[in-house]
Image 1 (spheres, rainbow, N blue to C red):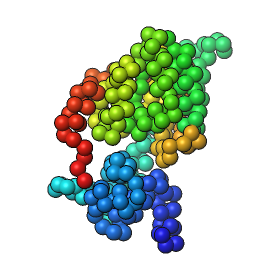
Image 2: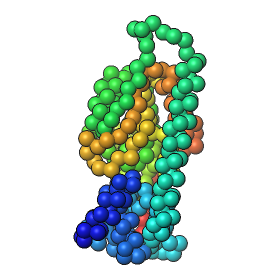
Image 3: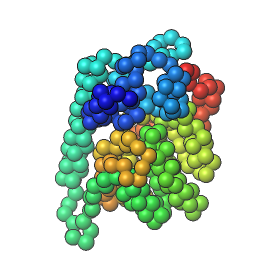
Image 4: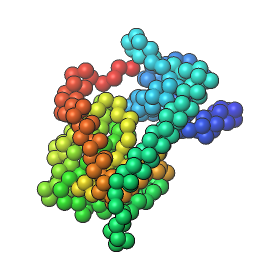
Length: 279
């Protein structure tokens, strides 16, 4: 790779793209539209990895798929793509501001408590912190565990063994309910979780707030979970709270999404009939 190419990639990453997103977008920008099979070969990776990164770039408004079959993907013109990425960040900031206002409104509804009952709020700063707190909370949970995440987060928590803790929770009588985007790439993972007793439902291309709630008492909700690497030290921002009022608010959000979703088994059946995404 030329020095100029490395500099360009570095600038894309500093603009907010992950390394894989930057490489894929730059490749399309430099060499023109291509199908996933050729992209996987050129970038020396798997097609599933290309599909996952491509979905993220499409969501950012930086890549467009063709309408014909097989699908070919093309980079959006640089100025337009960067403007689209900026708008997405602005949307995320507005969402954070909205959630801040909701938290402030919820706090007004509560009475002051004695210091020994005061609710705790803490910012978690990486994947390791989130998994450590989540493991401790689920280990001590007794009844219900709510999960609302996108498909990437579902893969990450499974990669680091968190679902073993979830299985133990189910084995001792706990109920695990999950809302996620059941894509073709994670069918095996979802089926395995269904087999151990998780109740899972599908929401297409879920991009809303990600959160988990333990026994409707404590919770962890994502502030910025744009994880770029499968690493325990990967930075992110999440809010941990033992405030049951906030936990109940998240559970209400979960129940609303649950009504709009479809069973994961039904989604898997649809995906298997359709077959893998065509290159």
